[in-house]
Image (cartoon, rainbow, N blue to C red; front, side, top):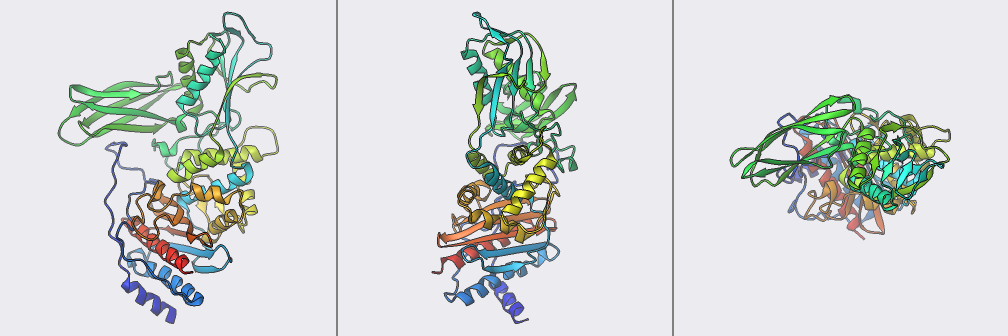
Length: 525
């Protein structure tokens, strides 16, 4: 009881930092309401510049642990509006293994995007930071290229799951093929996307089937631009808005472009999809205000493999390479000869993109790649293969039990993982020099970059908290590392579920206060 009284008294002295304003920038201005699960779209609320004076922790080790416990508990108690929420946390000294503070650390929680920490650590452990994905062009071993540049036979395009493949990467493949003197293919363009199976929707992505936002894009072993289409709109004082979709292709066509440039009023844009057989028609309508720059409307596409194939056919034509036959889908023959290839950046850089910006498409592709590289039986990788491989790697990292992790991004109600289990991954990675440095480097730095760029800025925690954020409609999470020197590093996991409506910014303020207390704890020598 005495501990509760002390914590309550301390809570009375804590003042929540004022919430910062809503950020703005290029994006969709659609009039329809936002998705029920908005993933990691951080709104900048939380402890900002000038958020109170620096905390001072006691120098006595025993008193310092008690102080941290009290600060963590007080951050919760000071916010009675969160009484209905489920809040769990754990903080551990990673040098000694001492648990410093905890609340309901064994309760299964929805991690939201902190699931990406599990995906990243597992992939780094199994695949290694230097792993690369290769996209390549092949021809049959009997194919002949004559002196006129005519290739007799089929051209095979094989994808191996590169989550960072873009139009420019495909253009490089087309240019490299043309540079070999090839001007014509007598056969077909045969696409091999059999590294993964044909189930392109990750588990739970069907929970919101009408959502067309890019954060819910499908997964294929041959996909470009993270399985999404971007339409750019720019206002023009002289007339209708300028609209562009790059590149032009046979899969997606803008059949309606009715956007008015205005000098007064609000930008309102709507991009509708009309699915057809093996293609999609897009209809863009609305208005854009002059002087607001460009607006990028980014939407998922339903057939990432066909979209990538059609874009590649367009790029080949632009390089002067003609394909006489049509489009087919089949495996590359084992006797085929590779003509040209394009390698991705190494996994360590892909993981950094994934975690800094909380990219769902990359996370799901990394997870399925983990399944493909771990399976011991022939055939395309399935989501079950991916889940099995993930569980094996989590166990190897020191996770006790079998947490429920059904996809790689944490989107929707796909996880039930305790704070202890999440911390075990952070601790296991920290203890392994093959994983830890790369994982830490991938996490957003408070006040600096990624989804923490606008949080804890101007406080002692700036640059000293490296942590992954997670955001869903009723979920907020923050997990990673707190340190002032390399001699004392804390691992922590804080997760809130069942957040009452309108209280997400309050939860972020609470977590930021906890983070600043952890930094103060590590600052005492």
